Structure formats: structure tokens, C-alpha cells
Length: 187
Image (cartoon, rainbow, N blue to C red; front, side, top):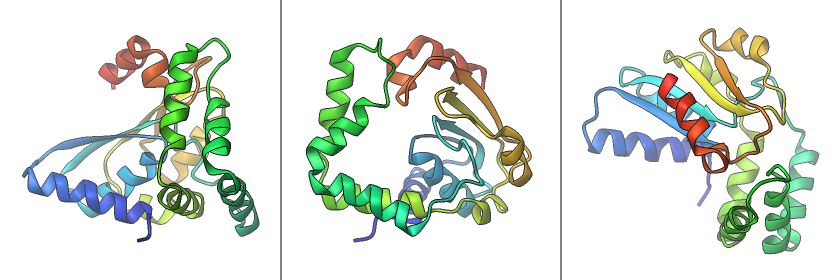
């Protein structure tokens, strides 16, 4: 009933435990960067690495309640159209329009209560407390659209590092799978 990063992290942990996995590398795109942090906090003895995909740009960034309510409120006013329009802004201009529309349509078809609840909790989430307990190294593969605060992030996660994909958008793994997979293999 409340789509929090902690609840999503619990789901990841449940799968790892059910499959009796002993050493895992968790990979999380977008919001799932915080989800994998939550899972790593819960089972630090099993998580040997974390890979964020276009996320975890700035552990020091916070949003006010007014900013959160304004954005979530905007999305909720005309959910399908506003979400689709917002998602389209996440791609570089030269991205295959079929890919852009497929992802925009998919995101816009989510149940509004789930999507808006998850977005609100994402924007409220503060990773700094969780990061104190995370022992696994953290690597990100990020687009260069938004700056990644490497030095600031290392203040709370000493192992933090990033590989940039210049000119990419938010869905790097779909926009340029070959380059993305090369970075993932290297990590």
C-alpha cells in the first residue's frame, strides 16, 4: 500500500533468500539505485557489488516537501499524458523514436497510485543513513546529462565510482546496449 524504497528492497532480498544466493551483484536502473542500496543494507554478507544505472548522481541532493508535492501533483493532474511527456524528455534528440514511444507508453500505462506513490517516496528518500551500512563497492554507469557528484558521494561511500556515457539519456541500456554492456562487463 506504500511503495517505498525499503519495501522494494525487501522484495529483492526475498528473491535472493528464496534462491539461496550467496554472492550477488545488484544492478538497479533509475529508482532502483536506491532499491539496491536498501537490499545491500539488509544482507551485506551476500551483496558483493552494486551497479547503478543512471542514478546515484548526488547523495547530498534533497528535495523540499513543496518540490515533491509540486512534481508529483503535476504528474497526477493528467497522469498518462504528463508521464509520457516527461519520459520523452529523458532521451537525446537522436534516439530512435520507436524506442522513445515504447518506453513513454509503458511508463504512462502504470497504475497511477503505484507510480505516484513510488515517485513521492523516491524523492523523499535519503540514502545517507543506509550508505553507512553498505559495504559493497558502488559503481555507476551514468549519462552525462546530469553531473555526478563523485567527490561528494565518496564522503559517504568511499568506494563510489562512475563510468559516463556521453550524450546518453536516462535509458542507457536500451539506447546504446553495446557501449552499456562494455561498461557493465568492465565493472
